[in-house]
Image (tube, rainbow, N blue to C red):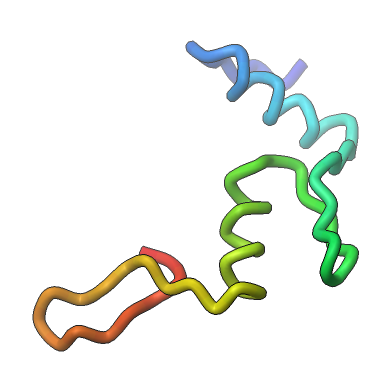
Length: 65
């Protein structure tokens, strides 16, 4: 065990994949796989061209914060 502790079961389960190498989230568009759902969702936005983070000063939009 690596000694890390988690307050949420889902966080612990995602972390376990670091050790097992499991990557259950598969992108149907390019075949890339991910260990955690948040990385997968961020990747999906790149395919969709979604840019949900906008700058309040210049108005430019970004995929990531």
